[in-house]
Length: 170
Image (cartoon, rainbow, N blue to C red; front, top):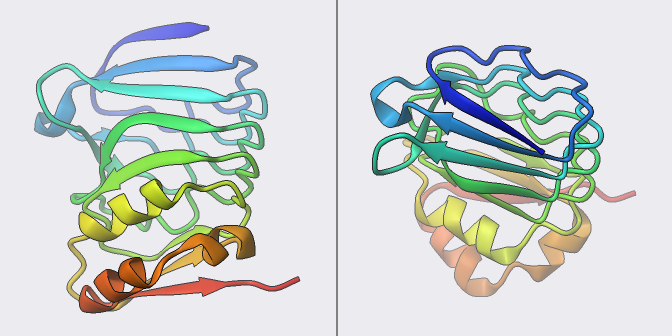
């Protein structure tokens, strides 16, 4: 278990391959969005990360390209990641996250891939759709098991926001 003090600005590649199961990160919040590019890349033992803003609201993310890529044990990202001001694509942030169940991303405006996450909750998917800010069509790619759990209501809400769901078959 590791608790990190106030993180301001840049977590780029800082915790790659870290051998720890739980991390709490205190971020400056939306005033100073954090660059999380490849921050936890291949942290294969990481199960839970808690993102806590120092001020009220959500943790603002400046970049999130590949942040949790190949975190094969990751189950939960607690807290809300505000990706509305992300300067780079968030598409590949969760590739290889086979045990991911919960993540809340506010303000998605680009496609995102969860093709390796069969346990991703309906609540996580619903949250992304309800809080998306895209102005052009985007796609949320889901594992077939997660895709099978989305409801007609979620599909209707997604369609109204130009969000498509896709899945990859084996």
